[in-house]
Length: 339
Image (cartoon, rainbow, N blue to C red; front, side, top):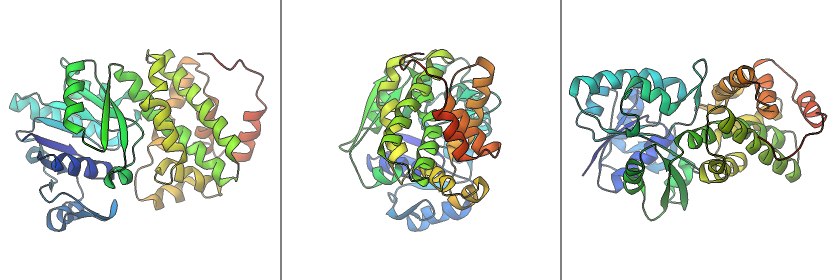
């Protein structure tokens, strides 16, 4: 039995924690909402995030980070991007005092605005400045709602240390959840983060009543943007974006009602304001945060990402959606295949 601390008691954290407990691991969920923690501990449910679904009864939840991390052999980060650095800093202090070096998995998909750092880079800075090979990212086409129902799912697990990626592969894999190892940690993270921005755009097209041709064009050109950023700025491997964490995750996030980013975009396309959407979503829309970092990266390195830049203007500069679509279609002619 392995003790696993899951930091983040939202939908994905709860489902992954329960799945790990199904494999006879000791799982402690960490979250700062005492009502959610009490509900998990007493009733083995988390209705705010996962309606009509039961958590493995051996899973416990706590708001005490020291308690969650005590003797943990694996730490799984499933927090919103804006919370990762805060919790990672405290985690680093606790682990330094204990002298332990557990394996760290990140299932958070985002880029930090300001620093423009990927989640693994934040975890390296705050926890393992000399042991970054102990960090593994998991990413790919997966919604908590589908995994909770044991739908067939395949994702990537990536690390600079293949042995650690294989440990995570073995830890998480079961008869409905399959992991493939990948050595391109940065590429896997970039793909998982930026596809959320493209998913907002996909939702907008649906909200504006555009059809299949438009959605296919958007996803294809969106993948080109994600690849361009990953290769030119972060030094990722181009082939990574043709895999599960790239095109696979892009497809599911741009087409599923389970995608918060897609739902956000759809409501924006229907005319609702970003403030209204975020207040009523009930969960974090990661693409709305990531697009700020992408905008900063585009400005810094002059990277051509017209879809992402249009979404930034719609969200934060009150740009008109129809005007942005018109500008997009009227751009000067371009060669299709380029980095």
